[in-house]
Image (tube, rainbow over all chains, first blue to last red; front, side, top):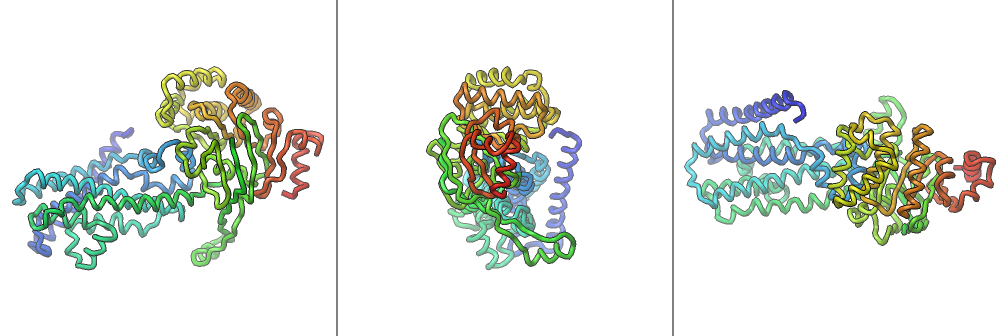
Length: 242
Length: 262
């Protein structure tokens, strides 16, 4: 935020990027009035919550995104000799406020989705949205963590991880069930996208069981294997010569 | 007390010839060599000792320092520093040590030195009083008073090194690792740094482990010298043990390197 003009322009840029994604969904629904039983405003709710989660995670976990350069220039040595948890030090090394643009767009869509929908809001449903935001941010942070931990073995980041990161953002626009049963199973039991998106959404729309509202919290257990993988990576850290 | 027993560490070093063709070939078939940086290294260092850790380039000096400071995990061997294993109890361990890498800055590049010190105070949770006392002492001993308001990137190498050393001592560590602290310094700064390290060791009984290629550093500071080459400890003795190999320190060490073929 040291550079004001750059900050505002980047924010506007971010806003436009996600606005573009919104237009994609909008024109789709001009043609087809429902996708696999989901109507426009329902998809908007799904999309906006996912985008908020993703942008929050991206803003917080930016240090993991650029972690390969932290490793290759030996910066990580400095982190290791400080008496604080390595993960928090990497997290704290960079916070990306320009993601505010994404979040703003997400909030606009969220409000629009709510106004158009006929959900009757009570404290349980508000709590569910909150759970989704927390769980989702944690799951995406976990994926960023895995992405960073790969750098211990390969020094460079792995491009295929972007399938899980940006791919998830693209596919996450629609409730995961529309991609078929197999996909839903993978996203439930392996990478728990469905737990933060599809199931709680069903509950919000009044089509799911009550306990679906707690699934996003369950999804945050995903951080445990991510953390273990990271720890294994730290043990493999090779530093640089000198 | 620092206890190192049978520590080994190997690196995979990838090899390929120059040029596009071999770069393409290396995509599918990577050739690498296992280079053993440390091979069954053992030594013990008592509290309050000053030890020079010398050896030619690539002998494993930095690797040892990195293992002792908890950055690297060795494949084999035991290291116990004041009862702790550096890479297992990393956070508790690094609170007790200070590390200066001559080649790499510990300070935040864009902010005044004093801001970096403040950050370190928070990171190490140093109490207000200790911080103030230490800062005062370090400022006067290392002559920092004019430098504290300057951003790190605008300091000269000698000025920066003095600030680095101060930064690594703010939390009054029991052990100080210095990895080539006088590299590239002019005569005046070198003398100042040496003088300071000496007085630190005498006054606070800080254990100092020093790697350097500058034999005058070694002569001025340490009594005990550990010579390492090709990942093995070749000699563990006093300055006099080395001096008998030549007319002056540099020559003696060069002769020793020849003798051991390292």
